Length: 453
Picture: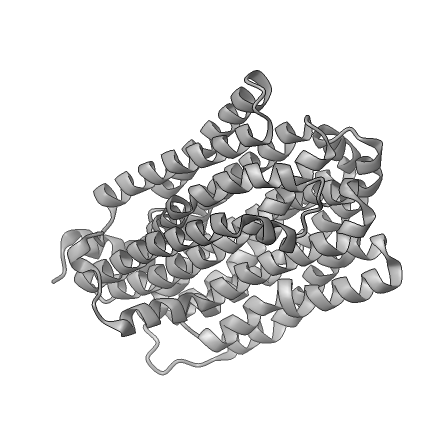
């Protein structure tokens, strides 16, 4: 049944000028990611006032958070892609089945992660690279991260489905609200109440709960698809399809988590100061990288919707526009960060040992981030058009096929210098390796192409 609401959304996604559409969807997502990254940096900043080992603990837990996000992104982007496909076909009941299944699966996975993580907390933290001096702080922060796990996974599913429905603005409100509250609570609990690392963990868990509540409210009020227990699928194939389509996101985020843990372990022989320095460099470079990711995620619903609606020319032109916009926006942040790297590291940690190690990797990471707009949108294109094999391979490149061998080889020959430059080297190689996938898709002919504009 073609309701007026559905037709309006269909026209928006298939007829709005591409640059305007991608920017309108990408800017709210970019702001959301920047604020999320900002409150991650707030944890790093406020905990940094407590010393090197507490600050290093937030870097250890950053890897655990990436593990949680990996599964959440699989469910969120898998269900979101299928919701976008269903809405392009004007099938709202099927869309509601996908989003309900993804959402309740996220809550279930989060509960399992929480229970197992709390039961095996010490071995998990040591596996992620914690030293004995970091472990007491990592336990406090890690317990808060795990207790909030079901809420976090539910939030990611809601966030992704709002984006895939073309409602990035509401997603932004939910995430930005939580981020601002987190920064305020960090200051209150860590600095004013002097609760230390535990205060930072409580601030993060509380803000994520508030963000989840806002996202759920917006989805229930604004979502075209509906979250209902009655819409929860009873067919195994539905769960399999969601996980299959979202698998590249799991690979991408899972490898980010694994490589983060590997980086911590490789850095560990160089001391807590080195781990803290790499934590500062990685968190700030993630802030810069969020611009490219945000614009790329703005392109995802455009690609998914138009591909299903057979407007393939819009998908192709949208890819090139996303690359150009993403590069310009990342460069605007990356270049000043390279110039003022010393001041940035000093703002987070004034320890001379951390300063000595942290400046070079921050500069290198910001340079490497300028190559990400040439690889991230390609990965998102293939995932959003449900080309799982190609998308999975692309997902494996940056943090897996390129980064892990580079880290091990450069560290073996150059020691700490290898640790500092391995990620940007991997970013550059990934960009060049993505070129054949761009050319292949742009040259592809589609017999059922619908002419537009």
